[in-house]
Image (cartoon, rainbow, N blue to C red; front, side):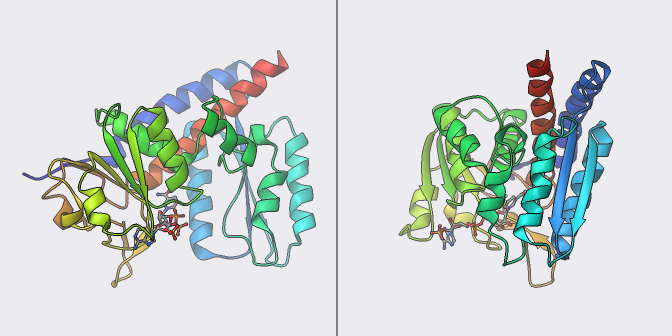
Length: 286
Ligand code: NDP
């Protein structure tokens, strides 16, 4: 039996329509959510990501500004710009597009962002809040995966979820969110011996490895749910995920194709974080 293939267009459109309505209400009440995106240098993939984020803001009515800085920008200049956004009440979200040029320390730049405006959820304060279950910013890609699972009607509580990858951006926060949803969670990484023996036990597999066709049919239990976070280029230069989609869809129960589901959902969650931050700012100002 072939897996149910998640329809990314449908789920993203539904979620963005909810966000558009929330934005409309907040704007009518006097607070238009605002996001600034900062990009340093000319990385072509980053330029595409930044343009997609700005376009998505426009779609739902969020005010957005893209600040394009030259490659030779100093860290002090970048931090000064961030501090000006921290002080600006019209800005509710600040996103600094990664990667930054080598002469800039990414960690120190993230630390300069006011945690209330850190819509990527990379600031240590927000990571800590996530860990102890305090409400606030959500890590965009992992939160998007949870949204997709819920939208698809996948039960998470009590299920065994295996996350392949332990990065600070995807793997670790993904595991925390699955735990928050009451899954039993296993995290695998490059030192995991016999990966397939672990992933074959999973009811839910989340692949965040960064290698094309890494998760194959033998990694997946029949009927399991497979969420593919990967964004890679195959031999022909086409975008593909971490999962060998054609083979795994014959084994899995539910699967996300790449591109089109987790990538756009990550942007959708960025919009949601911006709206939530604006709502919190408006409540504080009252
Ligand atoms: P990283 O390179 O930071 O992390 C990759 C993880 O995979 C590491 O934890 C690494 O283990 C693990 N890994 C590598 N090789 C193996 C192996 N042979 N067996 C088991 N685990 C292994 O990548 P990211 O987490 O940043 O991104 C992962 C993928 O997701 C990439 O394709 C990226 O492009 C994509 N991505 C997609 C997003 C979206 O919006 N859809 C957003 C962010 C990322 P170890 O720690 O031991 O090295």
